[in-house]
Length: 320
Image 1 (tube, rainbow, N blue to C red):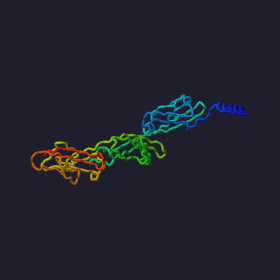
Image 2 (image 1 turned 90 degrees about the horizontal axis):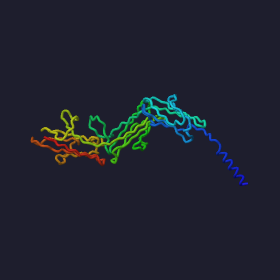
Image 3 (image 1 turned 45 degrees about the vertical axis):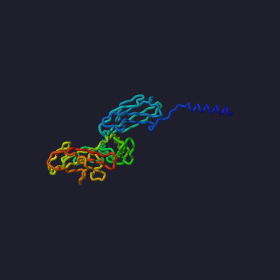
Image 4 (image 1 turned 60 degrees about the vertical axis):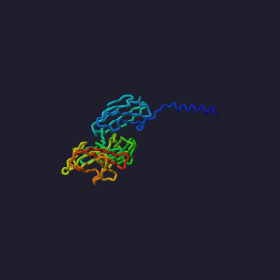
């Protein structure tokens, strides 16, 4: 009796696995990808379809752009095309007809957009009227601002990454800028942003590498009538007359915008001897003691006391 039941069971098992497989492929089984994920205007785009539920090599696949069929055939799993002009929508559709009769349609809307990333040093010192970009120093702050090209839509979500790590505290609704401090171990960093609308549709993405710079000291002269001569940086051999001159030492790209901050330490030296620090710490007035010609070595040491390595010195020889 047991032997007979076993034979019946094996016959039924064989019958089940011998039945033709006619499982229907669903839309959710098909994955439609584009690369790049956020195309720029007129950029080459590669679309592809994939699935684990059926063999697409045996399926008839049709690709359509804005309702017009541009490619079709057996196993046409990839398709390349050019994105349109900036913010011009392109509707990409794919139709898949499998060997067992399933028909699946997938669609994606592509609207080329660009996200510009602008960056500069944050809370970094530059002199008045400086027109360039403030360079973030080692152990200094950096500010990165994202500017989407599509400004007609209000309210975007911004997802920030730094050195490929998510920055959840800096990300969110209308958080279009990202501020961070770098450490003394870094000489560059990578910042990436992804922008989406309130429905989660991708607007664009961008990535930039930020190279850190080095602070520098530049000497200028202050004129009693014209003020600081920003157009002329002083070099060795600068001559002063019998009435004297006032030197200004400007610490470009130190990480504190306000020179009055207690973070700053200034030390002046004349021919190796430390001089009294004037009321304005980066100013030094010089006047010859007699009418005989000579020269003086003027040195300044500037330090940000809150950092490990933001210390710099510079010497200029002054003739009189």
